Length: 503
Length: 112
Image (cartoon, rainbow over all chains, first blue to last red; front, side, top):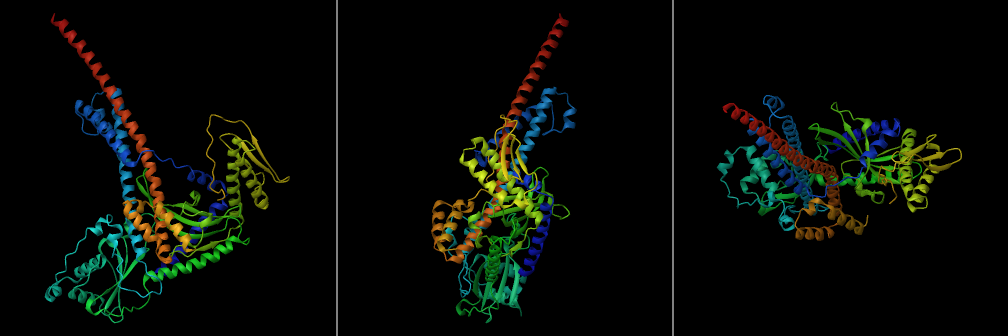
């Protein structure tokens, strides 16, 4: 199944690549515009969200009080509509103020609600991460004999104040039901109860162990869904005396937007003897899913090492890349109140300076399921920089795939890089031509122009619109010029774009 | 990657993790200490977990910041709109009072 998913992901990766390549074919302007937008500095409010929420609630109360006064005065229903307002004679100024207030209150409520939803999303990620951290503690070394290790053992000791759901669960000593009761119980219900027990830990009573044995029948593997929607795989040991439990940590619907649909990440394994007094030999048919994932990860890392070695050589032209992930993500658009889908890819790309960078490509997916190639956003990865694009960047569930840039992609990449460095040069010109910043940008740009001479578009120049500073290159004489015309001093200069600054 | 590098990377990720920061200081210390002594494979697994978290958190935080900025602006606007309403309403009452005074005066005049 994992292999199938892998193939699906791989094929969709190439589909995205084709789409991305389409953008490069179209020229460098579109990606540049989106890069500028994506790189706009994030302005973070000084106050915390909690403080802002309190202030917003006070403003809402203020608004409601004022609106109530008017509603009472003119005998209007709460949050009156325009049609209801028209029916009463109200002074123009009061009417306008009421409408303004109503609109402000509605918008404020919307944003508060949206903020709360995002916070819930954030909390879900935190919960997932903490659970996965716990699993990492309980990880099993490849080749190591699977023991009776319980991943949840010691959990409270490690994070006792957190994970209220788990820490609050207190099990009474299981009262052994009689065989008669077990016979009468609904097998599905019994299976669910057993799953619950598997999830939360604890030894089986004899009837429970027998029910579990019956659940296997003549099979040695059972897959199912337990409480909270977590996925399970149960394997019966070869001597039928133990069961190996593999489970996903959280249901997929609360995994957060970054999770590719249909991916099961089995993050914990433990072995439960069916008969505690007579534990089996714990031999199972085939490796566990985690071991498979580990093997997959090692395979992907080997593949990445090969691709990386290729990308570092002159054989890989500028603009070539290695795809490292390709996931469909869903985000809420507050303006339209609709969920929007995106394809999000992590790639390692060779820029025009010959260096490698980790870059995120994001393209919206239309209602028809087709990726919109005209709106690809490219941003430098905040997680990985040029120094740590080593094997740690590789995911176990995505086989890296290299993409060799064609001429159009190379030209687009060179154009984009030149525009960026020229932008830095133009901006640094405000500090004077003797400034280190200016000299650095000038040398960097000159080097890029010389190195990629064959790919520099004829008549290439860059103008910093706000100040009229133009950077141009004379291809014939190989000279770089920086000129200033019609400066507009009332416009504050933008912060330099250091996205591709060397580390 | 050497164990030292793994430890450095893991320590850095742990320091920046929202999930880890949500834990009490005592648990954070305990977690960091335990994480540093993990075998390499488990350390790598934890690095992946934390990187995954960062990847998921990034768009959420970006949206949260945007919402917070909007809320900040809207709060000011709402307060201003409420003030405007107060003034408009007071003005309207004043106008109505003046009209009443006039009407009363006219009534009084008629009675005389």
